Length: 254
Ligand code: IPD
Ligand code: CA
Image 1 (cartoon, helix red, strand yellow):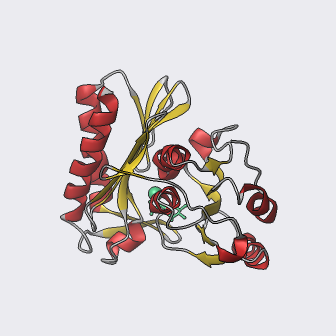
Image 2 (cartoon, rainbow, N blue to C red):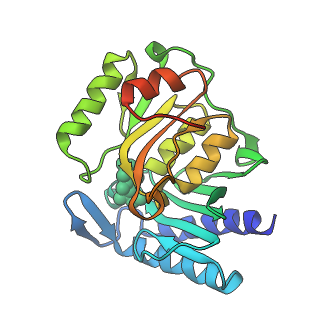
């Protein structure tokens, strides 16, 4: 598939560009605990230029420059995990998702710190550098780790309540600062679940493809105005769906 090959190559190239400024790119605040570096903007420009040159009729929505929907739509996060990136902490990535007719179809996430390329396409599986991915086989929340994403877009008390519910349900928690890599970890079976009360489409579009293609389940993230305004997100394996969605309060439909 032409766009799949293009997406994988672009994520890797953009990640190589991003890594040149790792821990050293000038940072400003967009809002409380919402950083942006010079490199976030440069990488988004780079990705947009590549898409415009190869697929000039496709639509693009990106974290830094926004954009609108379309039948063939790219959702780009030039650097996900910006707070880590800006501090020289090696957990960040480039995330590129592609939706066709509103259906998440292609996803590529490149982790420059490890030179790891996660990629998946609808019906074709999810892979890490060519190795097929599968979600964790864990069946008990008492053996599960759930990454609980956080931002200031929801009240602190709601996040504390989420952590409390997940812990009360018996799971372990963590937060590592990149929603896209959190989803890649679920696809790779390194974490049993990812949950966040509000996340934006550019953070999770690629990861949604990876998790589904690795045999996992996600809530109906693009329902309502999820594409433009974001939504809650939960991703996990089949065995933990009911237990976790009950604990978190987000239903998983497929
Ligand atoms: C954020 C990270 C974080 C997630 C937030 C995102 P950024 O993106 O993915 O882990 O919890 O919802 O906004 O600011 O690092 O690009
Ligand atoms: Ca992001």
